[in-house]
Length: 531
Image 1: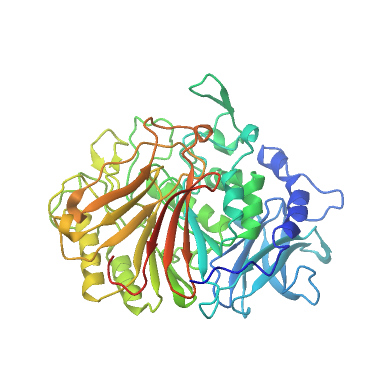
Image 2 (image 1 turned 90 degrees about the vertical axis):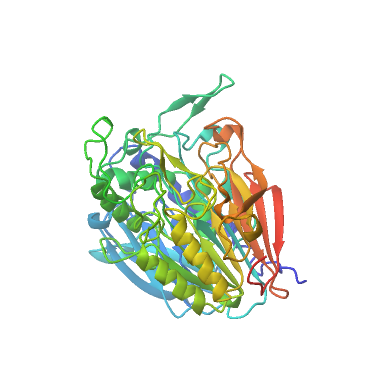
């Protein structure tokens, strides 16, 4: 078995620290409600850092936010010195996109470290540019040498637990950066638009949790400005900004980007006085726009109503990542016990897309990135009714409701002899590993598979959900608190790692705690329909 070689770019992280520290000074006063601070030189500033996303073998997206109107310019180089850089002219950043913008870099060499820096130019005088902000990412390799390593998790700034400077903010991102992953898969709940963040919260031991606060996070998000402010809030954290500059992302969304347990067509009850806008479709439209402005996503552009979150990201011959959207196309949350359900949790069109792309994939491993688990019962009591939020509804018998769509997909995978499927998710605020086996199941027309759960990144932790036996899950490992909404100060913050060996093709999953320590390891063999 080969071992991943040491990176030939030892300065990958060190080169970023100076530029990030320089840009950070302006971010906090702006986000706290003050008017945008002007640099002494009067040049545009990128105080929110940079991000790269949806990187392929020959392309990548680079994101930035300015503090005023500016023209985005990206320069790339094979080295940190930026000798003979290639220049990319990006969009004009203005109020229409909250001064955010994304530039697609094309024609990049595969399997190489790409160093980039973003400059913001005065739109009236291109010679007047602000301090450059630097970042780096690796393009997808054409071959298997070196393997693949990526991380996943979700759930950030939930249940009122925000950026706490007393404990160093979102410390988990430094632990993740230390593993030098090829990319980070965020499985949803990037923000909690429905979760205001107060200045303090009482902890069980009598101490006080302290949050950085902003005006937009003082109430539930309803306006476009408030949704935008929710995304900006997380970028006040220096750990996250450093991570964004070092590790490209694959982003999906779930419910809290809009509202807890939302579904299309939902109308908020009159008794929920937090909201003056009662149409969830209106809120979702605003949230989607802000989401598209604050993340570099190849299939979604600001203001583009035809774009979508679901997509497949190909990472060389070893890995395809199928990014699902289990929120936008779902049916109404209900007891979920109907005997026919063509819409399900994915919608008919996304299901057919997923089948088609899985059957076309020639990758050794096919990771299905789901924003909700399959066999864990996730209830929805938002309006006081005993409805179901995810797939499983607690009936251990034959598939009902949304389970029917998942059964159809699992049957398809079996009969098409599609190898190497692994399910990854977050959402439930604990970490666990479930093995699904037909011999334990009520529905048996599928091959065995694994589902791994991680998260939260920085949110309340909760006890483990009960299992539904329809697909025969066995919980092989779990770590979860016995109390509800345990703060990040109490631990139970998690992320997962997937490491694919370039020689053997073995896939190793490690479930890790906030400090990076390994809780559980599972090794899977390539080329099998089920295992």
